[in-house]
Length: 282
Image (tube, rainbow, N blue to C red; front, side):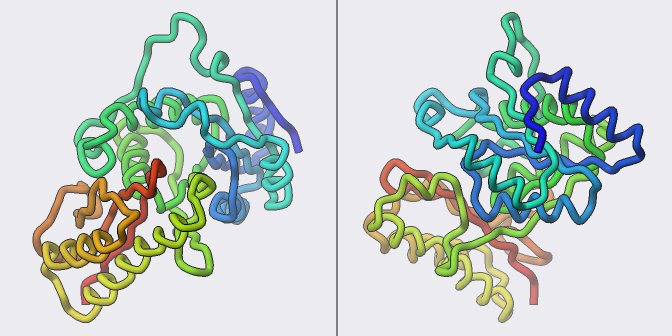
C-alpha cells in the first residue's frame, strides 16, 4: 500500500500507471470507513487495474455550524481496511495541500444543487464539486465510484462531468445497510443507543413506500405523506426534508410516471442522517 500526501506525487503515480496501460479508478472518501466504503473499493477493483482511495475531510463542504472539527478520523484504521479490500494507493492530502494560501477558485453546479440537501446546506455542493474536481485532477482516473446513499451528490457529480467534458466514467454503487436496515454512515458513530434504534424508522418508511409503489400506488404526495407520518411518530426524529423527485432533475413530482427517487434527511439529536430509495413503477 502506497500512501501519498502531495498533488505532484499523486499525479506522478497515476501517470506511471497509465503509461503501463493500466486502468485507474478512484474512490473519494472522507475517511472513517465502513463496509459501505469498502464495497465501493471492491467494485472499483472489478473495473480497474489500480484503485486509489482518497481520504480527505473537506472543510469547504461543511457549513459554519456543522461537524468539521469533530468529524471522526482514524487514518491508521482506514488504511488497513482499504488494503484488505484491495486498494493499491491512498491519497491523503492535508487541507493546506488542497487549499494553499491565495486559493480562490470554485466549481459550481447550479440547478441540481438547489434541491434536497441544497435547500438547508446552500454552500455544501460547491465544496463537493470543487474538491472532487481537484481529486480527479490529482489522481487522473479513468473511472470513479460513488455510493448511491448520497443520491444527490452522485447526480451532481455526473452532471458536472457531463457539462465539463471530463473524461471519467462515473459508477454508482448500491446503498449498503446494516442487518437491521440502517444505511451505513460514518456519522452513525454519533448516535446514542436510543437514537440508533429510533433511526431504523428511516429505512422502514422507505421500504414501505417502495412496496406501495410496486403495487401500483403512483400518487407521490400520498407516498411522501406516509413517510412523513411514519417518521413524525418517532419522538427522537426531527425531519429536515422528505421528497419524492425526478431521478435526473431532482425536482419534486406529484405523480410517479417513471422511476423516481424518495429521499430524506432527518436529525436524531445533533446527528443528521440521509437515506433514499428508488421507486420503480409497477
